[in-house]
Image 1 (cartoon, rainbow, N blue to C red):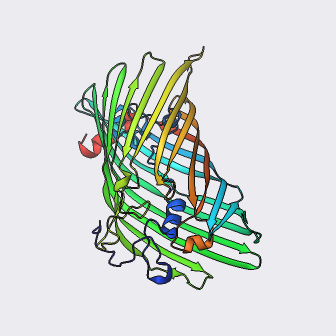
Image 2: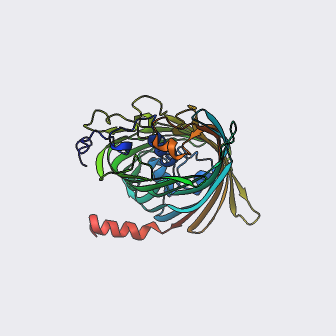
Image 3: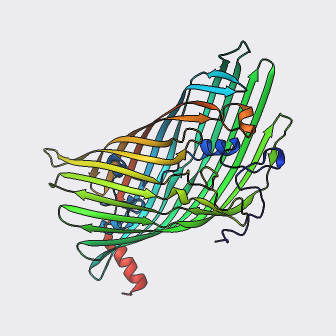
Length: 472
């Protein structure tokens, strides 16, 4: 890995524009707010798997399928057959902006309500898993790719801004925001059954992120138009370890997982175009260091009968430590999320609860019925209202296993409401006064996850590995 503090030698902080060519973006400047509210809104580290999502995401102490590596790698030691797995997700997300008002130059302007919606499909996880016998205990190896943070989103909103205190003409505001890309994990994992009670596991994860943001704002008042078009390309590369343990008993199990923090290479390129006299800016690609945070999760699972499972997880991520690392004193230590050296970016503690009931039909088919709830704060705090975005979710799921083929499906509904500020006008985006449009943000999200697992006989694989590494 490159030195994390070696390659950002300028006084222009990384990831920002100096409007007019001489300023520096700080937390309170509108360009910084624009990046924060349009490109830093979906950073919640989640595992991948329909069974886990049907349990509300509470899977750290269960972790008994191939997606365990994304929750607790120790759980892989419970797998007894070679298998390949695939997880996909469809997401429909809508964001409404209601009751906004703009305070501008001594005037109060009412802003019309707006609703934006987007739909996307993401391949979330693919893996190949191989269990072996070592010293009479199960050793499991796995290669996997996980889409840890899907960042693709698009919104197009048209707003009318009407003065409440004068007879001046109304303005039409059109804002188009498109972000494409993702952060993926390429993982090598191993887990071992130390004893009947103790499972240990680890994974090495190579993080690779590529995403682009294009944001265009157009304001029309009479025959006058003002426009600002902002573009930003991003790339992140780094590596970390996940370390896991499961302590299991016949009726309960306890799990713990720790995701180590790491220093990544972060590359960005920015550009601003506008028809205003102050002009725009085009920056060359630059690379700086970025500290990515560590996180720890605890899980507990209780099985009162053979048919019932009740499980709960608590995870804590140190998002406040996600900061730039640079030789530039003005950039070093700034938050990745709000470009501030203070403590406004919060850490996040996620809570997940779930239950599963195994319904056995008259012909012996087992149909799992799952339900769960969760609370997931995100590292996004509004610069004006100080309110953090918190997503609440409810989930339902089921599945079917027939011979070597297993299918799981889960649906999750999520919502969030908070009072926020927005940079709606072009003069807000380009000035240093910050956003002065205040209203209510309502998020509604529908997710559908589908997991497929195909198992194979382990004996042929064991014979091949013995021939390669032990001999006949």
